[in-house]
Length: 235
Image 1 (cartoon, rainbow, N blue to C red):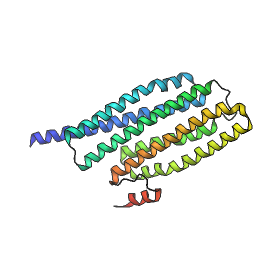
Image 2: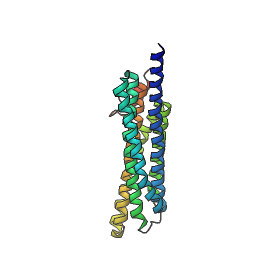
Image 3: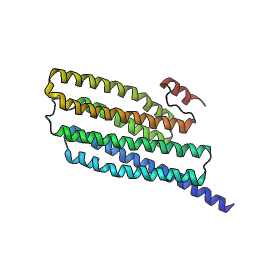
Image 4: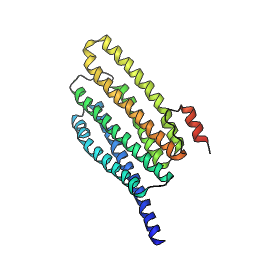
């Protein structure tokens, strides 16, 4: 009996460890997004290069956490509930790694844009979109940490607003390019930055959907927001 209890305690510790690994990786990726946006908006080339070099650490976190998940599945043969947790963590890790990649893309655009004249509005539209996406990412990780399905639903709902902001920004940039061909190069870099932010919003929604699956046991990917809400309200 004592041996079984010891094994159980070891298993619980492993589960807590991979959960902590995920949240640590989430904090790192949040900083990457924030720093990339700061570099973009201020023209801070040193900060942009820090983000690019910091991607190695994100990748190391990805590999370590993924290895932990595989080890638990292979050696512990977890029950259905624990298997769901490990599977969700593995999927969220993948989304976080891709958010890290998008941060690098923004940092590279920051380097490009630092060599160009800054617009009078100082990238105001990108700033607004970036703040919205950063909030989504933070809330998605908070929802996982607290296993809060309602907050996860809020994140999923915000993705529609981010998509609208992104499309509006693209229309503005197209107008700028038509009005003044000299702005084309800068506008294209801004488009790529906006696209990266929109993708971060998508990954944040993915994290939220994985959290709903963890809490409710129902895969809500590809469901409308209204149907997601129905799943969450079910006892």
